[in-house]
Length: 96
Image 1: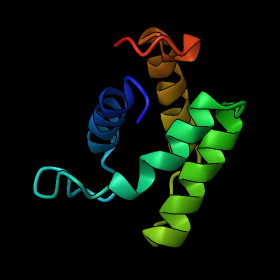
Image 2: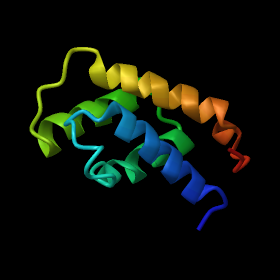
Image 3: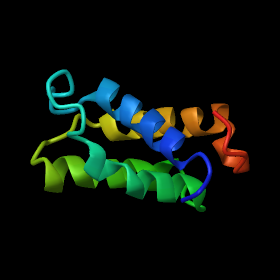
């Protein structure tokens, strides 16, 4: 396991639970764990904000059966990119 992986997963879990697109995070803290690995792989790779937004939109529509608001996944993708950069993960330092 890479250094910082658990910290990254916990940070991402926190952000997804704050976003809480289906409104259950207060009761089910791991509801969005199915969405942890793909965004982290994209953030660690060469994906851009648009690709992350498309992944989130696809998950909302196909996995959760929601019709997302027009900018909702894109706004969350922007938030994830900002978080990733701010925590130093973009430099692969493993720091939080």
